[in-house]
Length: 134
Image (cartoon, rainbow, N blue to C red):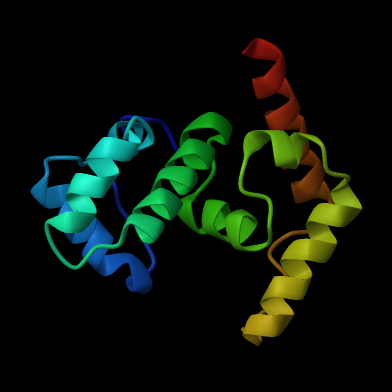
């Protein structure tokens, strides 16, 4: 997704954070990516959203914008312990597959794995390219 894409597809457990962001006029992934600690604290103090979850959404926004990932893929990587572009770039494809697969098994989603070696290689290549341009 591009930074100007509308803030959609947040998981249900982040509904309060979505509401707080929208109430503050933050409607795109790029705007969320640019949040600073002070603004996160203010948003958390203003309602039911938590600073911890707002930081997670900001991390998702970074992956969504930097690597052009779907929000669900960004959330999967974050929860699998690959929360930054640098962490993804420094991983092996097998490590990415193992971590995401382990998480999906722990969640007992029952669906086939979303990440295979080809997808992991693509994400790693995107992350490495992103690091080389910055």
